[in-house]
Image (tube, rainbow, N blue to C red; front, side, top):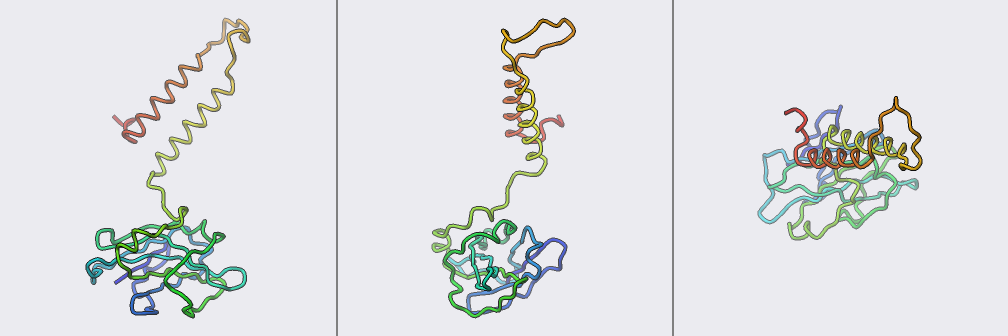
Length: 197
């Protein structure tokens, strides 16, 4: 019913069923994993009104299991990408895996999927840092480049009283740079590929 994918590794398509409505995937060497994809295989849909909450479990320093809610998958949203690299030092949350005695070893984490009512899924709050940014890397780079350029150019701003006349040097008013920055930012938000036209 479910699959789990980590970049550079084979797809896992056979989770361990630990209860009638609960499944887990082992993630060996989890310290070197940044993102995990959880997806439905398309062979068996959820029953009507049901979905799956997705949890990340890792052993803390004492070997105790720490469970954190990542998000969910449903028939309407059959796959999701979760960032787990920043979760390894966070706090645990309530989880439906209870006191199940799932084996924990220091280098193996787990992805748990609990089949639940959709109305219960809607009331759950995933850990915020598990959400993967929907902004592509080019847009993110461009935004950071704009910020860096504006901050750099602004660091040289002087008032007219501070300017010393120099006929060989051109001056650009800071408000012109700010106007360009705001225009570029607006156009990037509307269409990240506007610069290709």
